[in-house]
Image (cartoon, rainbow, N blue to C red; front, side):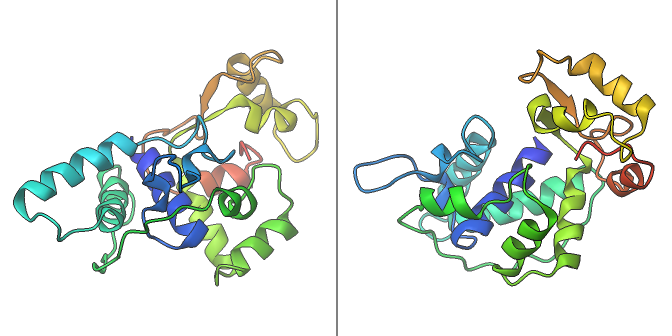
Length: 205
């Protein structure tokens, strides 16, 4: 769940700021970001945030926003699995609207080129260095084989042949819906293996 909470927070912040708009359900006046392609059947952890918010409301009703709960949960999730911790400034306001179209267009895609990714992050005030650092969070969690099947079956020079062969056991040609850990060695630990794997041509992305 740690990877899911970190990703949920990122997908919230990258659309229209860290305002918990990703938590809003579909309604007559709301087009939920949950149903955007990058989130649909992919983003998880909603129930964890809702449960935490419910507990907070019992202690101090109407004070702490869902956006703050999500921000703190992501920070704590990172630390719980060995990753970094950081000071979370509180006081965010929850959005009353969501923007599915913006989620569709702005969230980074797994098939996007480097140039497109750099541009998308720059549009949010983030540098290429920031993008690389944030990408390191892919050291934990799983992904559907669909997101990297082209890479492991391309027989390209940018992937280790032995690694590709190992990946194919979990991700056969007909197994795009299968789940596979992003890091085969320490899939549940937030460490630097994401970057080490890339250097060794054993990256899933």
